[in-house]
Length: 88
Image (tube, rainbow, N blue to C red; front, side, top):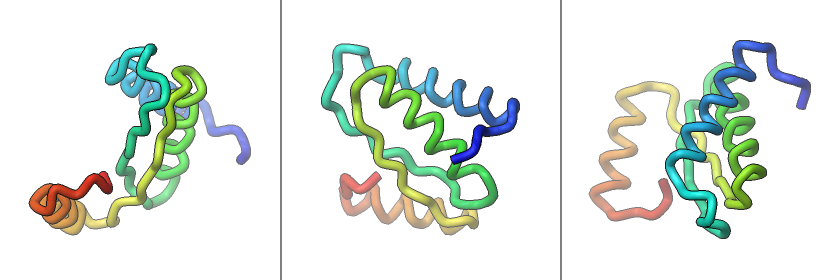
């Protein structure tokens, strides 16, 4: 993957920092599932930030592409939550 432009690197680092704050460093072996949009460079930025966090903490991240439409995302999340799904 080619290097991300500076604004995207900053966003990826911010995502990595947010993920690092979400789980303690000693939580090695944890798998986090992260839902990210699939349009434009959003998914690439999300994956880059998640990969940086995974390298920094030793945890694993599974990135799942979400539907493009916000109403479709909401419906998907509601369905997953209602079913108690561990998918996301």
